[in-house]
Amino acid sequence: FPSVRRLQTGWLFNCRIFLPIMRTVDKDENEILPPDHLNGLKMERDGHLNKDFHQEVFLGKDMEEFDEDSEPRRNRKKLIEIFTKVDANKDRSVSAKEMQRWIMEKTEEHFLEAQTENKNSFRAVDPDGDGHVTWDEYRVKFLASKGFNEKEVAEKIKRNEDLKLDEETQEVLESLKDRWFQADNHPTDQLLNEQEFLSFLHPEHSRGMLQYMVKEIVRDLDQDGDKKLTVSEFISLPFGTVENQHAQDVDDDWVKERKKEFEEVIDANRDGIVTMAELEEYMDPMNEHNALNEAKQMIAVADENQNRHLELEEILRYSEYFTGSKLMDYARNVHEEF
Ligand SMILES: [Ca+2]
Ligand SMILES: [Ca+2]
Ligand SMILES: [Ca+2]
Ligand SMILES: [Ca+2]
Image (cartoon, rainbow, N blue to C red; front, side, top):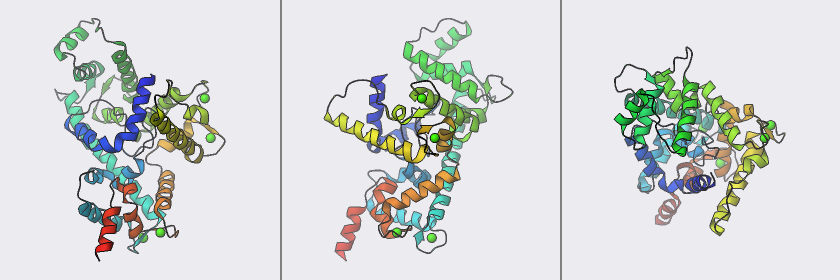
């Protein structure tokens, strides 16, 4: 699906702009579809890298507060507050250990948030409130969310009639069904309770689902079918011609970043091959080793005086990297004023 891939690549590069809007939409509807993007996870489910990962693990649920329109003065204050909290021993500088602990805390926060949201989503698919949802019930809700008439679909499913779905919807439904059965723990009764529904929507915190997600990603990227990824499989571009120079530039960056991530992070034993186990380690949000690496990486980005710690000045100067919102001009103005 070249056009889909192309769109998604574009979406990733534009997501900074659209993110606040998308989040609001997510919140208003009771999301019953597993999201492609999962907060605090290094990779999207479609195999794209999560560009906002470091912000998500640095800000946790405070992410929404740093949107494009929020007041720089307020953002600055907020960022100083965060810095003070990350600096656990209050020596006015943030060490890799302190940052690692912070990342783990924020990851936990995303998980708790997912749990809370899941309560609403589950209520939406389980209107009679008996605590269980069958695949058929879910299928009806899913099709209703796609604009089908809920009553009609329910009737047809009851009578075992052909739903006459288009190919795309049929494909989505099949992959959802696989995932549904994967989320159904023993005893496998094809009913999901709230907990199982959570791992259906958020596979990142269940070991079995995480493995399943990794399998799906490898299946999509693996070209020779050996269930491992080479760097060329990992960076291979979507089919289709490059329409213009801008798209070409985007693709070049895309390739460069993926190559770097493959070689320096995902391929842990550096043998040029990414196994499912390596990808699973990389994707596991609760992996402390990953959190420490991420912490070191984040510090390195802003550590201008090269002392392997972050001072408040450094974090304010690199506020765009940490929060997605620019404070630099504001900081400079303050300096000039005094
Ligand atoms: Ca400290
Ligand atoms: Ca392969
Ligand atoms: Ca390897
Ligand atoms: Ca420093």
